[in-house]
Length: 385
Image 1: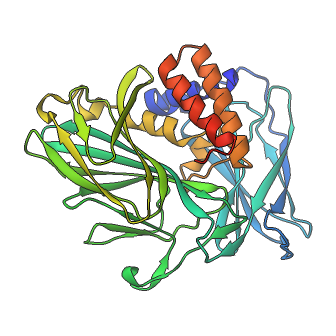
Image 2 (image 1 turned 90 degrees about the vertical axis):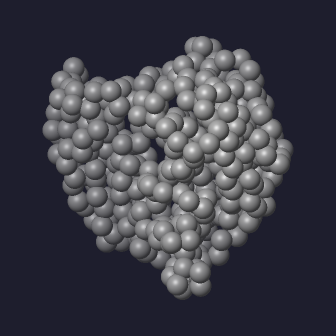
Image 3 (image 1 turned 45 degrees about the vertical axis):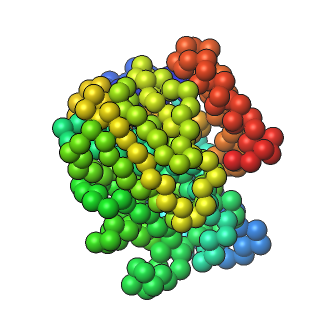
């Protein structure tokens, strides 16, 4: 776990602080160009019998924030594949993509350790379904920052797929009859919409509806986007509308003076994330279609630092990427990010272990640690999520 967090720290430095250095870093380990990655496509849908032969696969190679190259291959009659002539430089991260029934699937991160020349990989694929019965929201986070009469809002959705088929959506009349998998609603007056993660094929209507046609493979995807709201007074209110049921919705702000209230909104212990203190307000057990009016006050004294200096990317990174899925983040930038764990239970166990390491190392304070750990243990023992 400590090595995992160290990797996270290195990646963040490479991505955020010194991208130029990331592209020119000199490896210290002895490397060769004779590396081989071999693997197998596995259909994780129960009872699936369709052939996995002759599927096109693409290997992406990244170093720091730069994509170095790609290599193509094709699966054989048994779904096996192989890529050869690869650099074994440990600073290079590889990821494999394959298209099966119009959905692109991705492997976990692959790196060569010092002295290694071969790696095995498994790439899971799924049959599809138009039923959304297994799809739900695991959690939602909204991050607020006020500056110069503008409220900057970032929203993060963790969408779970508990089934063994990829959800590909249904025609939706409100979206002109087009295939739609997920729907999101922006508040009235929202402007400067920007997709950060997980929205590649979507329609943003004049009515501030976002209709996504991106597939939702198991165990889920992550969606993040940002928008602005004009605010010319010391107080402001706006509706947050959910189109799917969610057990918890958190509203975070690093602005120390901002006050947040509304029906059902409860203040939680603050979160210290990478040295920045975030106020945390939450709502629980919201039904599909619920709309909550968020009331903000004391905006004139709210801003702690300019929005340009608030590292929302870092906060997004910490909220979005679960333990065990960090190394493939660079490759995941090309697609809707998915939860790279085999099951919800394994994810929770990994996150609890990461919390323990972070607390022991002093990266999070005790109040936050105990609250988050208790919540994850409750979910792990069947207390709901």
